[in-house]
Length: 583
Image (cartoon, rainbow, N blue to C red):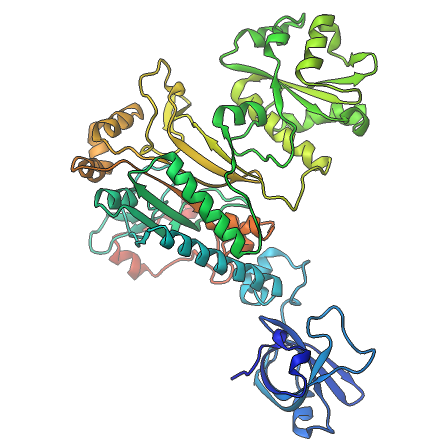
């Protein structure tokens, strides 16, 4: 229907006859001559409807209101002197309309397009209107480019795109499954996949060598700004490959994706072990755009005269005492602020927060009286303190201290506004523990199909896995591992997880059986596409980069899903719904 896109017109098109299609972005009547800004996904152009040029076009223009769908035919001309709009790409031209067709009218809008003050629930209810924003279109244009770039680089590297099932078997992989009842097999259920993990491993057993998929995944878990119940990942797997092979492919992929989206990044990326990430930054996804690394001072505190600290310091295996230096913090923060920081860390389970200030004549603060001059000098040396710096201390259970001090680090960085917004800082986190113990139960830190480095360790928490995460600006962008390809190792890992032989056979028997038929060494990785686009576009929420997202309560405001279904449908599925009010 169109000859040109609105935002693509330029001075080179002056005197050309054009046909444009789009939405009325705004309408102005200037004493008989009507101006309409016509918008499509390329931008805006000004239409001029003058009765001297076309009475019919002018008559139709008098009816036009915001968001009417129009087809306009006319001639491009230069705007008059002093009437140019420097804020518009097409600001030096306009189109004199000879024919104006109103294809569709719009009722009064529930909100004004581009109004950032509109609440999220309203925007999601009318998501199709919210998506009319040029900024929204730009996000999905970049998402499309990123996806195409990922496909192209993987194809160029010999990967085969294969679709794996969406209706599959429920397996314990960490989060809750979304279950789908079977009509044919009453009382039995499919599960929507949390990832294509097992199927891509089976493709390696099948000899497919290199697989990839832009995969839809589903997890019934509590939601956050960077989580959705359904999400998309760029998933790939390689046979006869190890960690370094996967990292090389992943870095090539990221370079290609960022280049397609107008950014240049430089691989290889930095690496940090899981242990160092936790001990220095209190997180397995550290934001390295700024420093503020923690240092260990537990040995110094063991010698202090404060029994609370010295008793904590005696158990170095289970406890930690961490120091966090803030350059120039003594000048930035008042004593009242520094005391107030204790309230912040208490929200995350801390029992307190100590601090020193670095003055001209040495360390000052309420805790200095418990330390010898030699130990105070050692703290200055270890933390590399300069006059004007402040240093904060957290003490207690290892897991607790690393968590709240890591959160405190991020809080301080944001408070001091030292986080650069125009930097992409990648880091690989490697050498993850194979297992974690919570409430006496052993759990796989990644998943139970990850290859352990060595199972012969005194403590189960000391077993490391060949697993790796890629982190961007403090957000986990993706993760992967070398997989277990020998059935005896897979069976031993399942046993260590407390999974009985009967349960293992029921839930993973098909995988273990497949490994018995000659499985190659294999490894892979999956990127969260939604998170990647969120970071690329500097969006505040993952919901901004998904066309039709759910709310934080996993509801679709547009379609009102989830919703009740007819009793006849439930009867066909052998399901009876309890009265929620009585439960």
